[in-house]
View 1: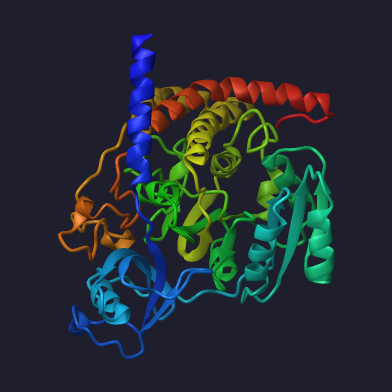
View 2 (view 1 turned 135 degrees about the horizontal axis):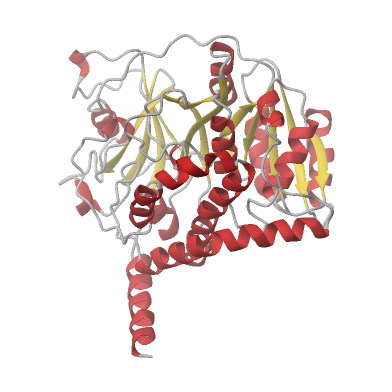
Length: 462
């Protein structure tokens, strides 16, 4: 009884601390050309372009989370503090030039034909914003397929038919579940590569080209993922999530090859969350179809709560195909906005993690020995995922991926705002850690319940 009262009091304190988190502006800063050592620390603003993030207002004095581009290519993030009366372009450009140099990008081959699948349910306003950005892609040969998942109204169908006509194909999937919707889209597409994104993103104009071109360069590539950054940091929930990593995986391209397991990933390939996220992923269509698509007993909208994207990553890797993380393939994501949203998200992520692992072992029993060998390390990894993470001082070491505290007077955690991937500039509430652990315990049960539910509608899990 007393323990429950203490937990409630602690949660109230955490919510009060959470509500004190202030908003942060989001911006893009584009620096011209290739940077040499001579321009480090200079304040020259010639050719520099500063613009707000998607749908944002012009940048004003205050805290600004900045995506830094070099000649249009994303190279890092930083946090800047623009003083009253200062020129935001000059302040932020000076900070941006402190980011470590990046290797020049390799020339891209002509990307293969592509299909983009967007699963949605009763969110026509957000969907329209996403579709507008997708139709502006510079890819030479692509189609867009909207999968309306278990619709209650005709709003999505009417939007697609009225506003987008033949430019977007509409498909209805009556059975709820994100993996089920994605499988319906997979069955309908014509492109050699199929990309998946969500209805709450804004895609960079080069997103699809950057995400799919690696498939032309590497015949053994089965999957590609890209960079996900916050479209807005207006609410405490959005700021807290991004300060603990959000969905970003940094700015260094990386290829994961099952024939050459990475030395720094002892749990490979079971830590699939490191590879990317479902809002920004693509597969060679023939490969994804050959493995049976996504497990329909996983994903949002099922009792498993999530894990469909992670299942897809590991399933493709288990077939001997490579996975490529490509940070130049960028989408802006509208993070969830409230404390209640974060509670739902924490529980769902925990459940999805263990649900997808259960799904993998059910579909590929041959992976069980490798999985059991990694269980001790996996338990330590799970404890780390659900630990109560406190603020950490930024040391600049992660600046190429968005150095924590970069550009903040005094630097590091004292700024109380996000600087980059996993900068941890706000304490992660114990309440959310507990919910994630509960979700992890529930995940296998949720997956098995989801499998049973599928049988009632005439479907079978993979």
